[in-house]
Image 1 (cartoon, helix red, strand yellow):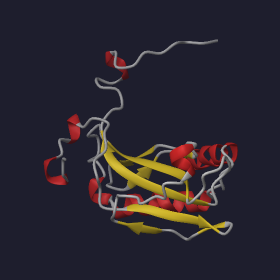
Image 2: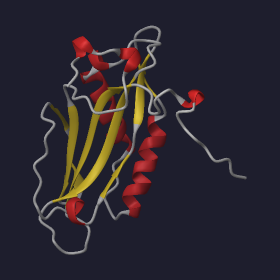
Image 3: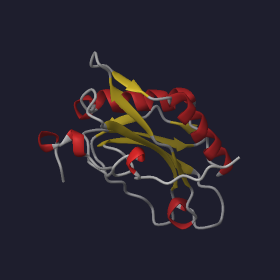
Length: 174
């Protein structure tokens, strides 16, 4: 697995590379915890977790870029927070507040700043916020407990060769 010292920023693909920290908050007894940064990237789940049997999960994806002055810039995080809330509502999952979403993303970027791609390298730091239903629940019903997690990975273009080089095909609709 690549590490920071041997990353070829200009030729990164779009795949998972473990970084130093991720954010985890838990939902129990009707509310979300404050959440915290953790270094462990392995989850331990009950075999009865609804995410495993009924797919009770949703995710978003957004990118952070390094500015010319070296600062981290998140691209449209509020829009991602709102979409995640809509997805949670549709899947009968508790909404993640905009404040929790934005704070989690900011903490992950700050804690993993050394993984933020150099300015104009063509790479970015991809953030994957997601919510999953966990806990002991075998029946067809929403979970009682949830995890909200945000992890990140340095990535290159999603489509190899980029859009302009035929890496993606689009259908135009009216």
